Image 1 (tube, rainbow, N blue to C red):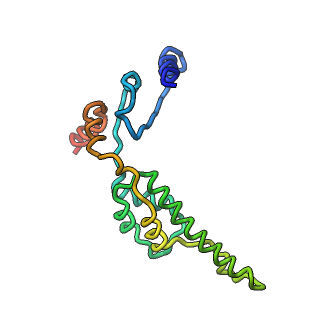
Image 2: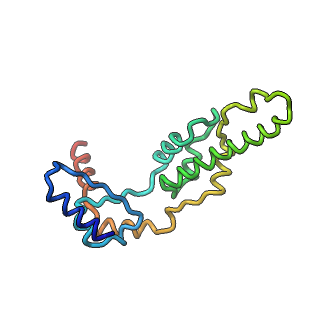
Image 3: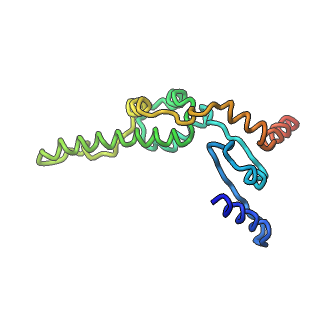
Length: 171
């Protein structure tokens, strides 16, 4: 598979398709073959999201929350979570509300008439997310961030450093 990938990468460079942009991602960049690394011009380490980024991800993945939902508190409790971990957390919190709805419907099914509140769209509360946090673990902590930073120092592109320098010059 690696050989075919390398052949296709070389073939892209020789064909006249115009500009071709290849984007790849790896959770274990140190396992990439040197031949693959040579073909990837820019190698950028993107770390775990900061609290503001986690809050934004939570807002996008939890569409129907209680009015008093404390976004900063949940974002703080997800320290060390990757974007995928936050997605899992949000799906679990959403499923908790669906399970509660199913229980209400099952209890109400024995009655002659379903009450309107039994079939309302579930609202995700802090308790749902906190319970989901207790059942969800951050997968990104399986590997030390120092290992990623060392790989970035040895093989990464200086694109972020150049961006920081130009921003400093503008200020």
